[in-house]
Image: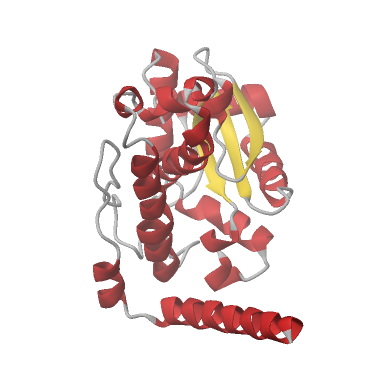
Length: 248
């Protein structure tokens, strides 16, 4: 009898989860806009710097809205909740918080790592898109040629890294104050800031970033993603890194 009851409960839980997921994807945008309250606390969810459909060449508007509003918004809320009783942590800028995770109380360290990392990752991610792709110019193009031979090689190596991430994670290009570039990957919502490195660009390869349009075809998503990069914004990040003013 106990086994049958357990099976019934498991079946009910699966059915509820499936129904909830179907409801979320089917919810009209007007209702979604009312469903997620704005985060309150020292960390905030900044508005997207473009319309939800600005990145249609790679990412559909529905994914953009769900990703920004619920995934990123939820991480900001959870980060604020994790540090609500820690005044010293509330006073730290996000990059300093992540670069000093070892000083975060163990009871909230995992929540700060996951949600603070997600907040930093997504803030960077939205900020480098909204463009029309192409190739960088000027100092950034020279740096890519120095460290990767040419742009095509750089793009291919980055895509290989992104497609090779097992499960959920990110591919990043880190940048030093001397302007040197390197490709790295991180699992989950980890960010190179946690290792004392600054991020130039990064691509989100969690399934929620691309699954509505691409399903399991991650390589198609990562190939198309280059079509929406705004290289002028990336160049600004590169200059800030060299000046020592780049944050997240």
